[in-house]
Length: 452
Ligand code: PMP
Image (cartoon, rainbow, N blue to C red):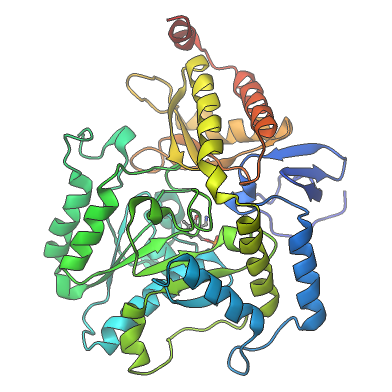
């Protein structure tokens, strides 16, 4: 094969060449099909080849592809920001468009810091976040990410920001159990704020359902309500990183909607362009924008491609398609069906320790010993093995970190396009079962459990 000049995740690995996609399937150059059980990177939320989106892209490209935000506004960006505001009941009334999730979370903290600066509280600069979190790869976003593996090579360049323990009920960091725990992990925020000093803290950023850093860790009801009320008490802005969870992935526009909690700022990404365009967004409430509107009247950020008409027209078509096909109202039913089938697999394979998640963002954590929740030894490289066997068999899965230190644990994310059918979910589980069998792990315990 000819030498490749492309820097890929693994420089010496052989990746199949993706040729085309149709619905929830991707086909490689040999014609082999892959059922995409994770929407690429939890991104291609409506699958491939959707005519409505292709038409919208073509129409916009024929009109105008790029204008610079300091010189013009454009119809697609205006319409998309209006639709987004409407979808948050005009709570997040302002949107700044960027190109990636990392830029969206970095913009979120810059706006939070600017808010306090323009309010005459320049000392409020600290960003609180949680361990087992991922907010992006750029140095600012990585500073607030509690992702041990991603941080380790850059520690000298990063701020020491993550301070809270994750709401990881399967392995409670405090050794407690819900509900007798009294949501200690949320209440602890108050202790941290008092230790750091509320006058120093600008904001708290959280992923409503933890993605790549924890395998769809989903806190119990009451957790976000408590975090938000503590933030309000101490005048700390509450930022939701909805890059993975937003735009319908969990069955709501924002995952926080499930708990009736309104963030002050939200970051969107992945599902916004659904893979048809690179676009992300930082959405901001009137309350946060007010001092900026009354002050410098301009946010301290900017990107060349911000509010790019082609990306905005694509995202607009994606959100309109989700509405016209009424996809969100069907997510819960589909998720219940899929979870039921995955739980059946759990009764067959003893090493499936936990299945969790919200809507069509489902995490599966694997353990060597079901009772002790003992992780597989590192040298077994469980997740990579499973993912590569699955891909060889035509099933795409997304890896996630697990275990309290984010290193000693194995999890995957199952997050198929929202328009997956029941037959396709059956096929997904069939291919997953085949991959789990092919791992060839001693399954004695599971057989006993199955026979009970
Ligand atoms: N936040 C979350 C929750 C994410 O899952 C990701 C990407 N996995 C990001 C931010 C960063 O997004 P991007 O890779 O588009 O920069």
